[in-house]
Length: 283
Image (cartoon, rainbow, N blue to C red):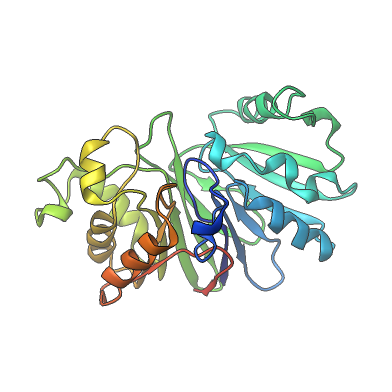
């Protein structure tokens, strides 16, 4: 299983000279395994380049799952070229309770106001369906389950298995314990942490939202994002082999992310790397 990062930023895309090494596009991750249809997680601005690649490959079937629909995770949807390929089929999973609700949520964005494209005019066939947190996601060939995260407005994480390899995508979530409590404080996991730890057990690779440093998190505890030390403690408790720090802060320039990568380079349980736009990890 290969995981490719097409967008690694949170909140807003950041082009410019200070983000050339780590990338400035917002969240978009591609998962490939054998001949299975590509699985796309979130559709931030990184989805534009991914869509161009899929178009060059004449890909006719794509699975797309959203963690949630905040703007930085859906910016790229109208620019995702497979949408405009007649005869293509795109399965679109949206956190919602009913399929009709999921379609309505996508339709709010593709309505001719926020972008000229309207949902009813998209040439590709869209199979839009609801993802209920805590349930199995019905995608042919892939084994995908979801989990409720801790983010304003709600967010969903995904556990993906194919060919006996498993990874998890956990973005836009605050910690599941208060400061001084739970695994990051060296205490037993809280009930909410136990739920997430069970979800992560057996994963070789976990992609995790670590937007803030710990000090920034303590200033913005209600903003719905985490910090590296917390992700390390959670993944260590779950026995994860490799943690990928993701959803980088817009203000974090290349030098800042270089320093973060160096700070965690010696971690072994789990191994820690930073998500870099354009990189592919083998799970």
